[in-house]
Image 1: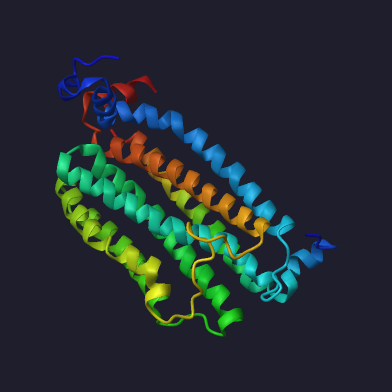
Image 2: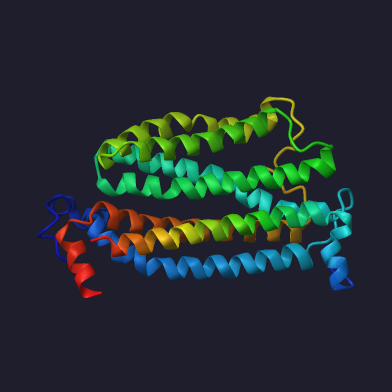
Length: 48
Length: 259
């Protein structure tokens, strides 16, 4: 699969909103989960 | 291996020894800690490979164009949303039957990750539905039962966090989780049982997949990455839960003293 240019890749054949909207939100969800987990882990370690 | 402190395991033979040893939170805690980096690394490598195959190897779909590339996250998240629920209910049932502390902790550790994947499945499905079906959402069997799965996860989390005594919370949550398992075959077979906009399974055990090999490879890599991610995150969360619940136990105080 050759996209030709980075611009074409980003454009996703006109479906950029849908494709990047899916992967972007998935990435955000994973980041949010890892973030809350890191905070929970540190709090659990500190607790007297 | 010491068996003195685990009398149950001592009666159950060497295999039972091993299982019983790690059913104790203080024995599982360091083991889980050692496993997390491995599963985390595998998740990152498989995810990178899956995205590479999905975006740079798999060809454009002749019907849908590039929008079909949502499949790589959508299918991985959807499968995981169902698998995690079944595993969570399995741990919950084990906890009810054997009354082991770790089982309820494992169930609680899985729920948020399952909810996360369910949300991603619904979200990516909506973004895929709009350009291909002309609508973000329809109240059909597949979509509605997946939405119910999200509410089951939310219900489990809300119920278990609302009850202060962790062992009682585990038991109440376990009942909810077990009753909710009925929804999983409904989700899975919904596309066969009812008329639905959602397409049937692209991959099944009985017939060859209805898609290009590279597309299938990308999908399976992403699904494996989701598995590894889920294991790593659930182990990390269960370690937090163990520390939270056993904060007054001697071994935890000892551990804290060392740091």
